[in-house]
Length: 350
Image 1: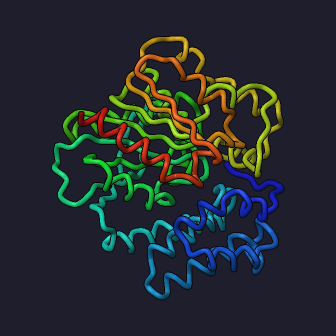
Image 2: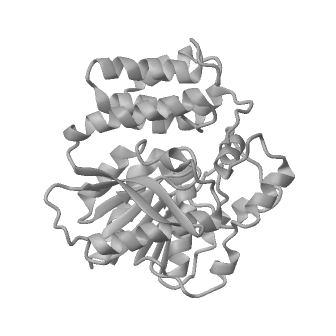
């Protein structure tokens, strides 16, 4: 199930420009920005058309990594219609072609995990710096509702070179290559529990979990329940984000509605009903957490500051706020990584 919704594409450039230019030349992003006048139709001037045209030029020139990045923006922010799903398929194809040139070890696998009294199948990526021993710890890692494992490859490379761990990358339920499973708190947690179980069998038994944005919601769950040996929550919603009356910025209401499995824009009452199950107050009231690091920017327009500050004073928990940056500290990401990488190393390696 999926749907499109009213969305001004220029608003997305306002918010995501720093993220876009992490993986693509600024002049190319600027050219697409100037050409885009509408969001959903697949025709000249539309978001998916102009980003796909840039991606195709890179693909034809053999620049497969750049093509994958551009197709990633073509399918952004949601697999709401067939052109977006086509862009995702082309992104995966170009990413696979780029993989032999990655400076890290890379393996793509398909895993089957327990899910709702049955099974679910999803692709994962294993990434590590060259020569990493097989018995290294494993760190599960994911993005959120609109930025997925393939989109964030540059970030994963940076983390892989900074840490003696193997990264297990996946898309959270309701998104990316796991969009066939609706985003629910328990269903998503069940899939991740299966990934944690698998991860404990392929390294030295130690497992961390690094979640970004909505991925941080799920890493907050694994951290609060003590299901992993180290949990990093970067810009994760945990409580106030799901409270009644919360609004959305930059079209995020439609992106979230798609991830939740709606086939039309949910009403406020429908969205709030779906969100009611997500709040982590029952886990926050317990004292079962493992080591946790919670990080975000002070100017986040998506996740209230309270969802970071609520972790202050907890046992085995470190909270870091990065000033003058927004959601997930993306415009000052090197500063976030300067906190995250050493903490994960100290916690998992010692």
